[in-house]
Structure formats: structure tokens, C-alpha cells
Length: 297
Image 1 (tube, rainbow, N blue to C red):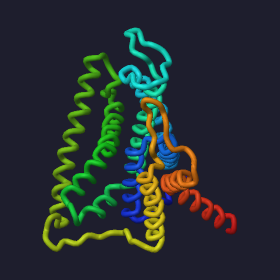
Image 2 (image 1 turned 30 degrees about the vertical axis):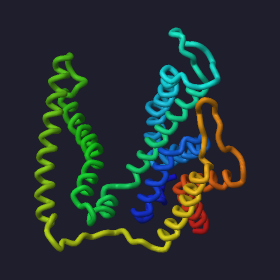
Image 3 (image 1 turned 45 degrees about the vertical axis):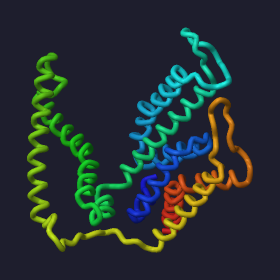
Image 4 (image 1 turned 180 degrees about the horizontal axis):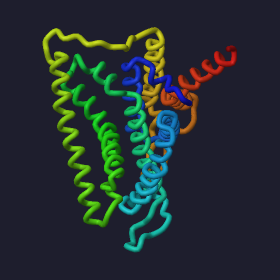
């Protein structure tokens, strides 16, 4: 999918959605809720970032799941189902292994949601949301979010330029490579300092910090955003009521036991899925509309 329809909503809608889905992913350890959040987070990350999200999953997230799931049983020996005994005599239990897997899935899910947050909540959206309430903090967050991408792009430019004169980190022996790397780093730091001076002069020229200063914004809260907020709050309310009434109740020790069936539990998990899959639903709907319009022309 080439378009992110959900990113076109009002920044308040985007921010409310991510606060809720990330919060639910962090606090609910029920296997069903973890699975729903993980599937939706990874699918949306792939829609937003494409191959980069796939590489992140294969080279970083998947090894993290395996490592965390394997590490927990080595230190946590609680549980009634003993699978084997370690060389030091401690038991290896099924419950501790599954709890480690659940914790790893929760961690990976939160990381995936934050990658989506970073792609959707751009710096201009954060400044728009928090610029009037906490202007200094909103500016700091905006600059921090754009810090890494800009520096990565600039260091690639510098490296390519140095490579053209055979003075990059791939040329020469170890000592020469180190010297070339320090040269690239020195150029990058010089560029960063100069860029900071230019940014400060630009902010001063535009009247940053002066009383009564206005700001231009392209964001408008329309009827579509109102429907989205109502949808998000309705799903979140059902999830919260379900959590209070015990729909997400699940224990791993000493034996695994929790809520699995029942009409109320199914409704709660359905609301959780509807909330987590909102960006995918919106994107698929817009893609269908675009294709239908294109087929008529």
C-alpha cells in the first residue's frame, strides 16, 4: 500500500490512538491480547516502512524474542510443570518459558508500535499538539526526533564524498581507516555546530519566544476526525471495562489459568482488535476507494 490514510487524520487522533494501543500493549499480558497487538503492530509497521520494517523484524525483533524467551527460564524457576532439570539442579518449567515468551512478545510489540509512532507522528504534528502548552518541550522533542534521520543522511553524504577521493573507512590499512573515520566524524560535528547556529538565527528571525507570536498550521479537525475519536474512545471504553471486569485476567504461575471464552470476553477482544487494526482498516478502505475511482476513469 502506497498511502498511509491514518496518518492523514488530525494529529490529536493519531496521538490518542498510539497512547491507547501502546498502553494496552504494555499492561495486558493475556496471550490473546498480546497476539492481537503484535499482529496489528507488525502489519502496520510493514505498511509504513516496507522492507525496513521486515529487516527490523528479522534482524532485531525476532532474535530479541528468542533470546528473552530462552533467558527467562534460566533465572525464573517458578511453575508446576517441570520439563527438565538444569545442570545446577534447578527445574526448567513450562510456565516460566511461556512467561518469558509473553514478556518478549510484549517488548517487541511496544517497539513495533513506537516505530509506527515515529513514522506517523512527525515533528510538525508534535509541535502543533504541544507547542502552546509546553513550547520548549515540544521543540526539544521535535528536534530530537529529527536528529537521528538527519545525521544519518548527512554522514552518508560525507562518506560518499570522502569515498570519491579514497579517504573513507573502506580505504587503506587499519590505521588509515581509523584516521579517515575520525576525519568524517570531524566533518559531521562541524556541520552539526554550523547547522545549530543557523537554526538559532532562523528561530530568532522568525520571532521564536516573543509574546503574541502566532503559528501557521495546516491541520483542521473535521467530521472524519470526530468519527475517528468516537470510534477510538468506544473501543477503548469496552477494553477498559473488560479489564476491570476480569476479561484480561490471566496468570502464568504456578499454573496457567485465565479467561478464554464467554460472550463478554469475545466482545472485549473484538473491541481490542478493532482498535488495534484501525489504521489498517482505514488504509484498506481508502485503497479500495482509490481503485474503484481509477477503474471508472
